[in-house]
Length: 248
Ligand SMILES: [Zn+2]
Image (cartoon, rainbow, N blue to C red; front, side):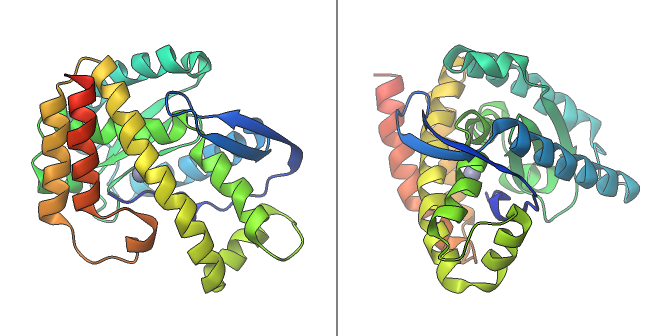
């Protein structure tokens, strides 16, 4: 699955840098942008996408899948609140889309969008779908978007300005893209691990989680996201090890 970490166009103001720790994994993060700034811009981007998808008849156009996704996501959102209590106050949004370019993502603050073509292609049962959604919820719980945006400023040799200018540099600066790919890969692995913890807390079986990553191996193709995503075989190995820890 690919996430849309690099698809945001934000104009966010810098606040005092702060350190935070990711729930469960304990990894330290530098968070320069304020949560409210990032969430505000994320919300704008998310709603713009929904409006566009709706206009094209591609939003929530599979009622059965939408019902499954909402039901499963509810269990994971409850689990998220157990590891990060403030997520219980977030305005979570859950939608699906038949746009073939959308796999799955969850923007900062809990804005989920699940691609029906991706779910259909992998023939995900409920436990496997919970693993996919758990991975995306984990990105939001771990504040990955905010960390990613902050880190762009850290690795760029140019003075920090608005974030949309910074992301314009990302689009044209290959070395900057490579530097960011390292963090993106770390975040993907972390979302895999935290997502499985959330899915386990929500009551989904570890065997289904491993099956999901096995299906990723079977469907993996060379991609421009290869540098920012761990290989599917590595993700499967991690999932198998996590499954033993979760269900000894
Ligand atoms: Zn991801």
